[in-house]
Length: 64
Picture 1 (spheres, rainbow, N blue to C red):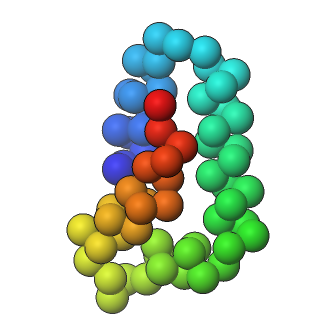
Picture 2: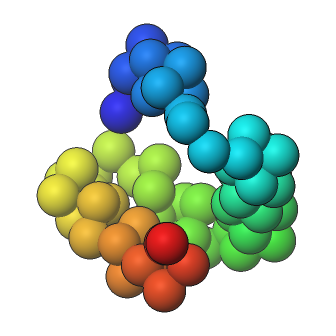
């Protein structure tokens, strides 16, 4: 997702913006404390599909 796509999606939020902010900070905290995941998501040798799959496996239980 590009920054522009993220910005567009954030402007379309119809729910609780505070809950969204808490979720985003939660993801940032998770990545800060799990450097191996951060490396996996920023590794240029990994495909975008592989990175998307990792995100789905990690955060699917948290999605509403």
